[in-house]
Length: 90
Image 1 (cartoon, rainbow, N blue to C red):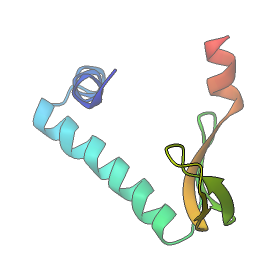
Image 2: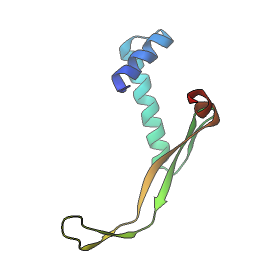
Image 3: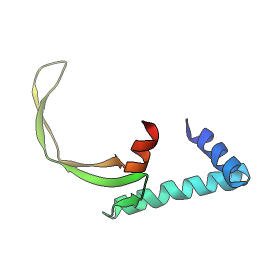
């Protein structure tokens, strides 16, 4: 399922026009992005949790030359599925 499929599914389920559903989906994505950017977690009970995880700096190798390179520390978005989502898939 891609974003257009999601918009269509939301429009059908909620009885909205595709334009309104697209605005709703974009707003949800923007709200999650804003919360993660400000350092907050987004917990959706029964679905899962979006969080930001810090990755420490590490040392790697350039696959072409074999030279050692330093991989800088970074922050990565993470998603942990909730019990309801896990149970519905099994």
